[in-house]
Amino acid sequence: MAKKLIIWDFDGVIVNTTKIGHAMHAPHYPDMTMEEYLDIFTENANLGFEAFESRRVETDFDSSAYYIEKLLELEADMHMHNIVASLAKHYHMGIVTSSRGSGVRTYLRKHNLEQYFDFVFGQELGFSKAEKIKKALADSKVEASDAIFITDTLGDIKEANHCGVKSIGVTWGFHEKERLSKGRPDAIVETPEDLEAVVRGMLK
Image: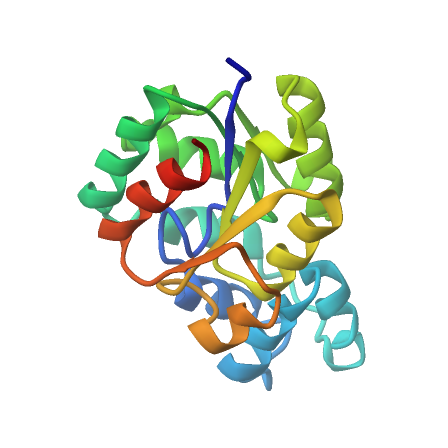
């Protein structure tokens, strides 16, 4: 039987960091509204931020340190923890994220989740999620048709489409159902309770 791979986005899927994300950028972009922040993720996030460069304020604020500090204050969603643990028994799994991989790993270790993931490809490997998805496929020796990307943003769905990888959009993170649907994901899931069944159905 061919190997199957689940690629997870981190922020907004495994843990809800929407408010943390907006707050960590506020010192550099003090007039950026929450809606403008969420709009950035309609495309690749790095490209989205480039549009705001003229509004950037130089400051000594360490946004990465702030993110990790606040991330580690969040409690794990035990229902999501159980879903991850259950799926890891049957599929290869990894994380592709725009956040620093080191911070994500620290969170995973704190909540005993690291054991379920074969890799974490973060900001250190670049800003293109499409390239990181391709690396995940190559490293895992999995065909694109045997992989799924679970994400909460329209921009990520577009990058999965670019790689020929099926995607699931979840509505408990950065983007709502209407916006996610614009990328034509293979499924949209509105509650964590429904996620596992949808994944299993798509990876039959």
